[in-house]
Amino acid sequence: MASQAETGHDIGGPGLPWAIDGADEHEVRQPTLAMRWRLWRNRRIASARFRSLMARLPLTRWIAQRKANQLFQLTAGFVHSQILSACVRFGVLEHLIDRTLSTAQLTAACQLNYERMRLLLDQAERLGLVIQPGPDLWMLDDAGVVVSADAGLRAMILHHDALYRDLTDPVALWRSEKPDTELRRYWAYVRGDAPNTVTAEQAAPYSLLMRESQAMFADCILGSYDFGRHTALLDVGGGDGAFLMAIGRKHLNLELALFDLPAVAARAQVHLAETGLLSRSRIHSGDFATDPLPSGSDCVSLLRILCDHDDARVANILVNLHRHLAPGTTIVVAEAMAGPSEGARLAATYFGVYFLAMGSGRCRSADEIQELLAAAGFQKMQTIATTNPLLATLVTARR
Image (tube, rainbow, N blue to C red):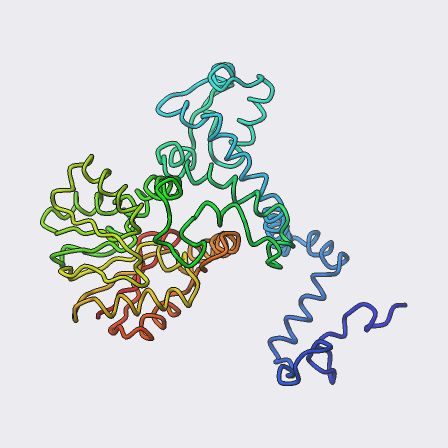
């Protein structure tokens, strides 16, 4: 019979050192009672015999099935994303907007083989994208309605192709053996030490993606914070001006300003002119980590900005803002943040890997952002839960 040492069951056992060979001596510590219980529990779960018993007992069967389903979701997640991607690429969901179609009709519309079309629809139904209201008839389910109605969401789904290519060799990615990732090339402003040199050609793809994906995010922010209490807003890193457009429509008396890299600011000038908001907007360009910011705004927004950058650059950004903002100015940081809620946990899991592939930034908790703001000199920090923690949490502070 194998000994405990051979099976690894001695980990955390009574009287045994709590350390890994070669670990720093300061890291050696004895396990707590909770840790010992968890190790005992893990040994039980690791036993196929125990899992089989739990699956057979009526009182524990539902737990065993739920855990098995959760584990399978982890292993099948990539397949789910590819089904979604196929539905978007073939236009399945858009073809079903406000109508019901047969498999044959969708086959013709999507230019797919009938059997493949049927398989894709069956898979989409299992994921809650479509439903069958009658024999061989298809219409949108809840998730399908949202995806079909949101062009920005569809753009992000298609954008994931670049992320998947960067994830094909996870060992190289996690060991930083692949620094020149596709996402790092895509987000041009995270490369090098001179963001101001980003060209119009480099800025165009990511600026358009951010503009298209802004609608749901902007609704979340505007539904969670009253910008009407301010007289003038400066959107730092405002991209094409999508948020200015959304807030300008809601707050007609709010003065608007935008600050971004020169190539991006030029795009904002055009976009805001097309939407009729340029007359009440001021456009400024520069690097928000080093260059002076325009004065005259009593509120400054940083929407999905800090998460894109490592701590050192975030510190520079916030110090630069503190240097140029007038006392009493409110700063509003809005982005997906790590936290205990299900939405925050999902966001942190996704963005943690996305930023790893991007080679810059991380998904921080609200407490971490407050600490960075305090270190830069800001005061009166406050965390505000939004209508959708999956999309964003707010942290506000005063200059």
